[in-house]
Each structure stands twice: as C-alpha cells, then as structure tokens.
Image (cartoon, rainbow over all chains, first blue to last red; front, side, top):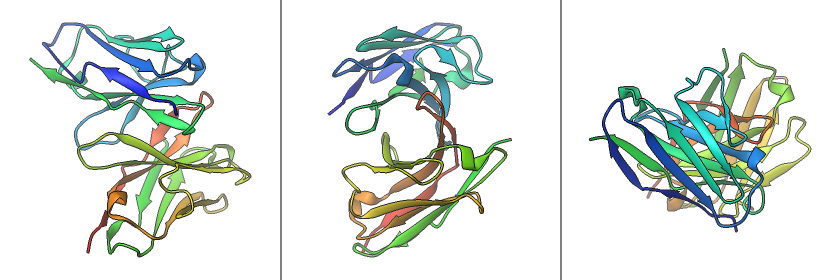
Amino acid sequence: EMVLTQSPGTLSLSPGESATLSCRASQSVISNYLAWYQQRPGHAPRLLIYGASNRASGIPDRFSGTGSGTDFTLTISRLEPEDFAVYYCQHHGGSPSFSFGQGTKLEIK
Amino acid sequence: EVQLVESGGGLVQPGRSLRLSCEASGFSFDSYAMHWVRQVPGKGLEWVSGITWNSGVTDYAGSVRGRFTISRDNARKSLYLQMNSLRLEDTAFYYCAVRGTYYSFDYWGQGTLVTVSS
C-alpha cells in the first residue's frame, strides 16, 4: 500500500518568509502523477502543482514543486497572508489508486 | 468557468442508503474522468471512487468497495455516488472532482456533508 508522509505536521512562519513542505512516499512513485493542493478553512482543496513541478492555471510563481523517486517538496516563497492554509500531496498509482498525505498546516507565527 | 455542484448529503441512520449527485458545467464533462473524494471534518482527504469518461472503468477505495457505486450521465452532465449500508465512519464532506491528464484532481466542487448517526 502506498503511503505518503508529509512533514512537518505544522509549520509556523511569518509573512514574507519562505516555506518548505515535504512529502515522502513509501515506495518510488511516478513523478508525473504527484500533485499538491491547498485547502483554506471552509473551502474545497485547490490544485497547485501537478506532475511534481507544473503549476496549475492561475497559481502564482511563488509556488514551486520539485522532487523525484520518493521525496518531493513544495516551496512557497515570499509568504502572503492568504497562503496560510493546509497543504496536501497526492499520488496516483498502486493501491489504493489515489493516495493523499495527511497534510501540513502552515500557520502564521 | 468550471463549476461542480454537489447535492444529496444529509443525516442518515447507519445501514441506510443515500445518493449523492454532482452537476457539472463550464467544461466538456463527457471527456473527463470524474472522482469522489471525502474528508472527515477537521481531518485529511481520502479518495473514494472514480469513473472514466465513458463509464467503462470504475474504481473504489477498499473502505467503500461493495457498498458504494459510482455512475455518471453524460447527457445530464452529472456524476452520482450511490452509498449503501452506510457506517458511522462514512460521515464526511464528499467532494466531486475532475481528474486531469496527470491524474491530479484539477477542479473540485464545494462538497456536501453526509452525517451517519443514529
């Protein structure tokens, strides 16, 4: 079973700083099938990154994704107040067909 | 503009059934695979089920296989989730989502809350 582990669980930063969020897979994954989402309180998730490193439509270039194999990173530079939310990684492949990490909460310090 | 509007959620007793609907607009619904993803309030995301554009292939998470059935009506631009034998642990927000080329969930509805309780 594919397991995605995100770290840290909570990240406390100030606006203007940069955030580095990690997603580690229990087995090597297909990079093309690794995505990141942002979820603000009371809202549905929003796609940020697909294919490990491609920004979705309308996503500012402050958001970037990197990684391959089992280790993936979402970096958010120059944090804006609206960036403080929960972030999830997601992968397709194996069993179950789609897996999500448990999430990283980015909170204002 | 892509819009996905879920409906059909509510309070239901354990063991009973419920049918969720998702009405789509703003894109070529009949060209895309569609999925259901759920989220227990305050918890993380869990993929539930998916269906290909032509209903040729359906897939389910182990936790719902045999109890839930996904279907779609391309003429009505609608996605459905028939949920039978509901359990307390099925309580969650249920989101419908459009699956993109890279197997990401590119667009999401606002969700509908299903509460299973006696």
